[in-house]
Length: 85
Image (cartoon, rainbow, N blue to C red; front, side, top):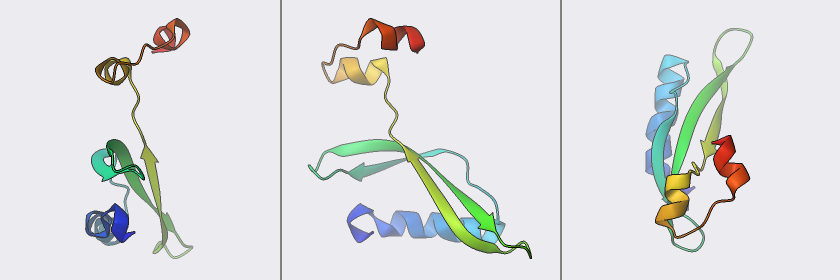
């Protein structure tokens, strides 16, 4: 995890442990395997055991893709995708 910035995730994991609640989606930036900075929408959620204590933490990360991003990168989106957005 150190490659991805464990200090970023550790503090958020601690918040989930303390509050026993999800954090809601927030933005994070990480370098991908090609050393390109990528923005992600991240959420962390607790899985509680039968006693209501945090058993595990689930992390969901979505790379937001939008027409704006495509155009900024010089990519032409397909019309069918634009209609869906």
